[in-house]
Amino acid sequence: MTTTSPWAEHPAAPDPDPDLQAAVTELGAAVRDLLETTVTTTVPAGEQAAVAAGVRGLTARLAAATRGRHTLSALDDLPTFRRTYSPVTGVGNGFAPPVQFRREGDTVVGETVLGLRHEGPPAHCHGGVSALLMDQLLGSAAFLAGRWGMTAHLVLTYHGAVPLQTPLVLTARITETSGRKTVVTGGIALAAEPDRELVSGEAVFVSPRPELLELYFGALTTADGSPAPGHGATDGTAL
Ligand SMILES: CCCCCCCCCCCCCCCC(=O)SCCNC(=O)CCNC(=O)[C@H](O)C(C)(C)COP(=O)(O)OP(=O)(O)OC[C@H]1O[C@@H](n2cnc3c(N)ncnc32)[C@H](O)[C@@H]1OP(=O)(O)O
Image (cartoon, rainbow, N blue to C red):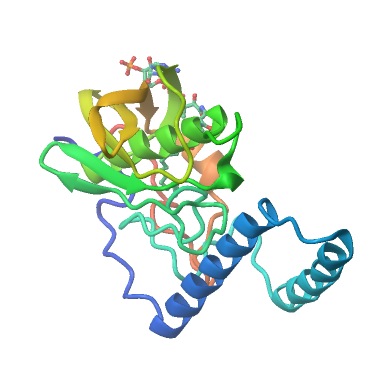
């Protein structure tokens, strides 16, 4: 299969600092617990106000040093798709379930359990969160097959409500590739009933032409200020 990844020629970054990786993972997990508890707590108003003040104090400590949107985190590596703060897969993102995707033959698979911070209809997943999961699932399937693109088209069918606090399985496979375009289908099901999709969908990922790559990612740097891998890519059809 032809690769369209802008990072195909780039060696993977060295393994990240294990102390930083562990601390970011622990902070992400702690914030995940905080977010989940924030939307489920029933403690009195005074206690919630006191906790809010404490959280603001903690936020100020983290705000002592931050990165801008054109700087990758020190833990991220685009060629290997290591994205620490993804809202779906990021261990450092408290909103993320987080779900990790892996290849099994020609299929990409991930398991997860959603929480009340993902709620739409009571006790069930928000339809937009399902779309978020599907976009990442289908995009990851493209990436894990050596292709890369931005979502150009995403169509979903919601066959059944997705319950919270219930093991889920996400699966996807590539159905078509041509030039810069990759078409992927997949779905979300209960782990207990993997063959009955609650959400199914199809997406078209397109590797952007050079002008768009430059427009979107031309200013992107790694944490140490170097141009990000893929930054200088000029031929979208031959990346
Ligand atoms: C240094 C870099 C760092 C990057 C780091 C990323 C890390 C790895 C992230 C992975 C993450 C995974 C999952 C999250 C993925 C998102 O969240 S992406 C964010 C949401 N998507 C967007 O913002 C994209 C917005 N749209 C666009 O920018 C542009 O429309 C696109 C998609 C880049 C395409 O633009 P283009 O390059 O000008 O494409 P164009 O030349 O018109 O068409 C090329 C081909 O695609 C087809 N095509 C174009 N649009 C469509 C469409 N809507 N429907 C069907 N076919 C289409 C064309 O027909 C054409 O086909 P052929 O004629 O070659 O057969």
